[in-house]
Length: 374
Picture: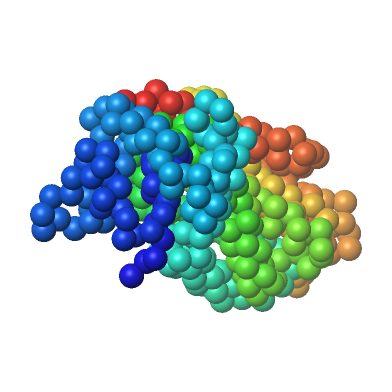
């Protein structure tokens, strides 16, 4: 039902003209279409690199087209420079990631499981957290409740990143096929994957925070809310980077799922909530705690809640934490941070560490893809 047809192979034109002339054109080059063969399938097998045992016949098709009368007709003239190709007939390394980003954006708004379902899942998690820890008041009785909610918000949002595994494995399978055809390498793939995910993860962090943060009654200041969103965004980005690394190492859904879940379980154990950092034994503290991204997320969220907020000691003024406001029947939030060893620590340093962990996961994922070229 098409009037005109353009056939490309390795970025070069092999035919550009009327559909009615296709059969005769290729027959004239020595490629007769067998009887009772689907023309589209015949042409795909003829020009697609997936079905080519050598590049000789593709070179023949390219050269034949350049010498063809159709190639010089204005009506059907092909572009002089194929999109994204340079003089060496290879993909432009600067423009290839943009093309992959564009394709991924188109795919993302169509992929309900990878994106819309995950967004709905995070929203349900925010409603769960906000209604379980509903309208907590700033009293010493709720200090532990605030701490529990902070751990839940960071750790379980991170854990639910395993839902990204199927979508990544699908993209990875496509990458391997296209890489085998020499179209692009792991650098373009990794860059496109990271850039496309950034706005989505930021949107998830903001949506989750708008619902869960204000329902829970956390620090009602712009700084407190902004700090929560920042750390939640970094948390999701680190968790998804972990998924990329593990799934690249073991591109089998069940194994990647189990491995990622196990890793998140380890991070929960040594993150500083279940066991305070200074109470961890030497092995877990120095081998795992300091590279645990959940530990820095928990630390950052705790500072956002407790650094600039005071809590009532309640009836009888028996304060469970000693602080300079004890005479006013109040607990200074910094006293809570001191119990965890978080007081007086600049958050800029830990944001930098988080970015380093995220970059480390991505670079290791790139190394895995680079090493598995064949």
